[in-house]
Amino acid sequence: MTDMMHSFDLYTPNSVEETSKLLDKHGKNAWIVAGGKDSFDWFKDRHKRPSAVIDITGLKQLYGVHDKGSYISIGALTTLTELEENSLLQKHFPVLTAAAGRVASPQIRNSGTIGGNVSQDTRCTYYRDGFPCYRAGGNTCYANTPTAMNREHALFEAVRCVAVTPSDTAPALVALEAKMVINRNGKNRTVSAEKFFIGPTVDITRMTVLQKGDILTEIRVPKKWAGAKQYFEKVADRQTWDFALVNIAMVAKTSAGKVSDVRMACGGIQCTPRRLTSVEDLMKNEKIGSEMETLAKRVAAQGAKALNYNHFKIPLMGNLAARAVRSLA
Image (cartoon, rainbow, N blue to C red; front, side):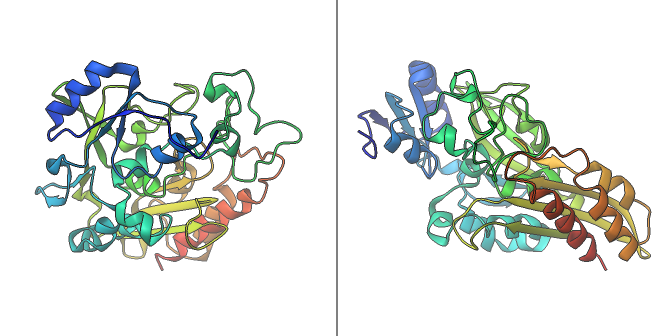
């Protein structure tokens, strides 16, 4: 039977230390939940059946947005609505508030967290429906067969798995050079947003570097790009609820009509947010204008390999890159 959650023991710790002890005690049978937007789908379909569910919404130290001088600190349990409406982020990082505001629907943003948004699993329908694919421990990719329906899937780095990252905030965090703070047994380590997301060549069963026992506690956004020109756009089948077919985030510094520095990242086109380094390279130290738009459109999707039904993503990538460049004029 599906659409009915299995039974499990629920734990409600009040500190990161207590959470770590529970994770250590229950090992692979433990599952962290906060907003629950990804978790409860798995539970209802009975594809994930942890015996110990650890609700971390009581960890008050993981909430809020704080100015730390050289960077802005975002607690992993901060909701997407809070991100979207935060005046500090609106001032310094509008690309991130715009991305947060395009996630799903208002109801989901009210309870869904930034930590959950960047940590969620892929939304490949074959994988989510329980097909025994590579990612689920099987021996084939059902989305990459002659008859597969794969319009939402990858254009790049499709090694055994063609699933894509579903996060709207991920490209913005990569563009902003954010740092992810991960706690394990009381010790913190910091990973760049770009390295936080991993593809199937690293581990086909995970979307991020997070492993059992890890807790994403904080996201740090350096002020390097505060005040820079910023752009975010998402294209989806519907304006609300849907995951991106392609999204794009850009931060750029300009001077005297030229681009002095820029970072651009796309989501929805491979398992991780993809830096558009070819576009960045052609933009740097060049004059902003129609020629730059044309070149960005031409090179954005270089190297893409379309599947049966996602050819449209190639010109879409180019158009989004061109529109990002146009926003600088």
